[in-house]
Length: 263
Image (cartoon, rainbow, N blue to C red; front, top):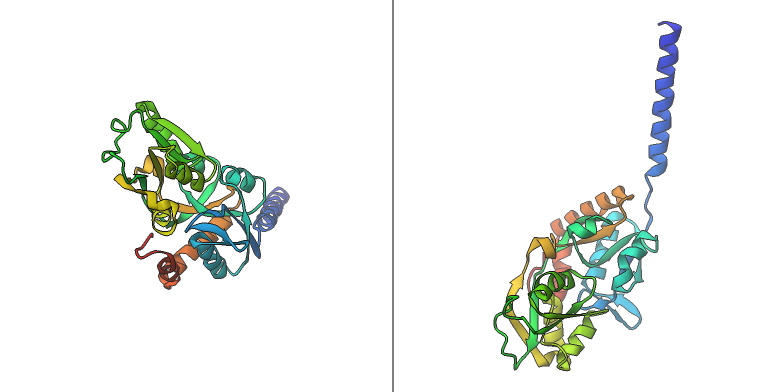
C-alpha cells in the first residue's frame, strides 16, 4: 500500500470514528420523559384533587411503563401547548392532539393512539336538524380556539355566513351554549357525550346533525406530539403504542372510560 493510500485510508477511518462518536453523543438515552397535557378536556384529561387524570394520562403512563422511563406530567393551557413543547418545558404532548398537516410543520407525531369524530351539540329546543354550512348561515357557533374544530368552523362555516366564537377552554364554550349565547358547539363527540351525560349543565342540549371526519381538517387521529429533533423518542412511543394495543393494556384503559372502542 502506498503512503498516499495509507494516509487516505487513515483519514477515512478517523472521519468514520468521529461520525460514530457524534452519532452516539446525539442519541439521547431517555430515563425521564416530561409529558404536557391540558387538564381541562374530560374525560381525556382533567384535574381532580390537584392531580392530572384522564384517558390521555393513563395512556401516557402505560406508554412510559413500556418504554421503561419515568413519567412526569405538566399541566399547560391549550393555546400554549405546542410553544411550550418547542421551548423545552416538556418532551412530549399527550393531550388529545390530532395529527394534522399544519401541526406537522411544527412538530413530529407518533402514530395514533385514538381516533374519534367531531359533532355539533345544540339546545334541546333547537330547530336545527341540518348542520351543513348553508343551513347554519346566520347562526352563532362556538368551539375551543386553536383546535381542529375551530379551524373547521372558521374555514367552512364562517365563510358561509355563520358567526364563530372561540374560547380558551371547551367548558367555556359549553357554558355559553347552556346559557343561550350560542346556537351550537362543535367538538369531539366523546368529549361532548361526557358533558351531556355527566354534568348538570349538559342536560340543556343534544347532538344534532352528522359526524365529521374529514382528514383535511380532523387529521389522522390523535397522536403524541414530540419535537422534530427527537426522532428516537418518536420511535419509542410508536413501539410502546403497538405493545399496549397488542397485550390488552389499551383495551383495559379504553374500557375504564368508554363503552366502545376509541382506537
